[in-house]
Image (cartoon, rainbow, N blue to C red; front, side, top):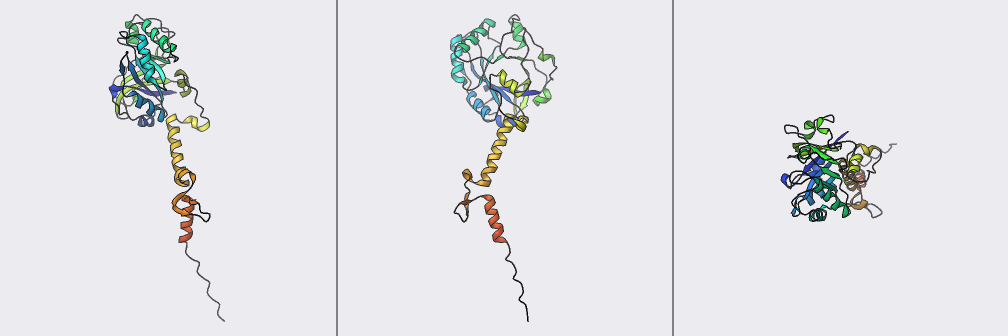
Length: 280
């Protein structure tokens, strides 16, 4: 199976509705947290929290800069990351692979493991095509032409865009920067595998869902739960204690919606017509 996600930052604005993103079938979000040793993306906290609320897996990324102190970059990133998977954005102005590993080591030394590495093929070639066999979770980008729904733009699981490089297989493919998602033009990514396999790549525990719920995305499960809770509340009243505006039963308890309908039916039922008296 192929799972789709989006990659966003302040460049996309602060108003992407992640509930709508989930409804459109996407299951993960990568969003920018920091860059260098001083830039903090103001959209990150909202997108991180909205991703969690809507059942989307989320990773926050740091844009690595070769012209900034590595320790300062690691401190800034982890100060603002919060509860999300980790990701390094390693491309223009990020230096060579020595810079990459210095940052990974600095983050690891602070108690967090790097889960994902965005290393586009063009940048790998620019820095001399080094060995990437040990980089965690390789994300590579090659874009199709055009704009539209991500599923329509996706070049397929057998696309040459998926071919590995530097001794590393491609784990996630960013295949467009022009997907129309929730009314916004964004980068779109694909992962070929199960949701639990993606969770493992992000360093998250496997889903505990069992049975028929396994067929639903996490966002769909959250939506189903909310609907069940709403229906239960409407039928049973707040905290299951009935609705005071519907009156009380003979025991003095607030009536539920079903109780009230039953009483109404009883009250509106026509009185039985008495039988005619017998004549002598």
